[in-house]
Image (cartoon, rainbow, N blue to C red; front, side):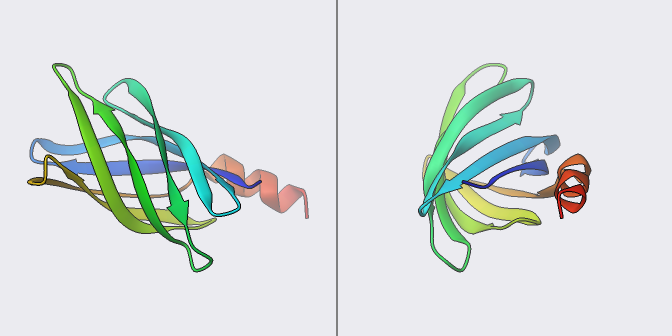
Length: 109
């Protein structure tokens, strides 16, 4: 079961927020966590063979808990999701696999 850690940017109405996303892929099922704004929250979803994903979870902010769902793409190099909350708020989340992880993969070859 591959697992990837990404350095991510979450684009919000209040500016870019930086964090980490961990995704584990097991037979088309995604599980992991999104760490941003000082909080780490679980996320889950589905992925097809081409890397197209649906994902859902919650974002913890300083004052509230925001449910989100989204679609996008994930692979061994990057993630790119469009997230929607409350059917009106949209967020773009994108990022690249952490450099340490790439180095570990290269060393194991």
